[in-house]
Image (cartoon, rainbow, N blue to C red; front, top):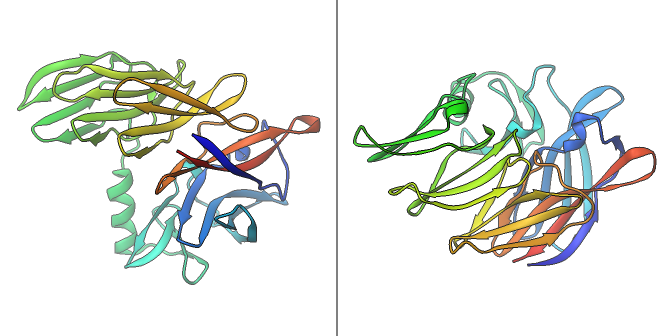
Length: 279
């Protein structure tokens, strides 16, 4: 892995103890631009902030859009289509229309279905959910770990650690997921056998990306790293500028990875930095 460039996104500094400094959000990547949608607190009000950059790391423009009073936290935002229009899903009643550049704060059947399909409309989602990969079914048993059934019969259990913080996703013959709390892990398991392919203590995994049998997520230590894990058990780390926070997005584009890290400045402020990594 090689860091191609880093871009300082600081336009209004925020204290590192402020939850909004996680800069949770989503990336939208086109052939010519990178757009980063995230939360920004401005004069005690909440805004959707859109930073647009070129592929060589130059900021083209930055825009702020006031958010509805009731909206979901940034790490729940999702790029999707609402009535065939590209949008950033904010909640069950609000979304940002990318083409018109306005926030639509009005429930519609299409919006409700998109929200329900993605979040399952379940307050215990990622706590008591069952994930189905026929003929296999994975049940998350909270603090008791994970149970896999095949055609209704138990075939393996995985104890695991921490709370499930991502979907359980099937990749080829494997499942991958991330946990947070109690150290936090990023885990890959062979679905048929229950054999653990890798289990990395990341200090908390809330997002990851996959490119060609390689898996990417944040790794926290005294410094911040991008971790690359392979199905053959090999792990590689790339040191990023400053520190990393698990709630930040990580996204793949062709053979590149986009990440967010933070450089600590005076008075305990953290400056957000966007990193573009060649894998």
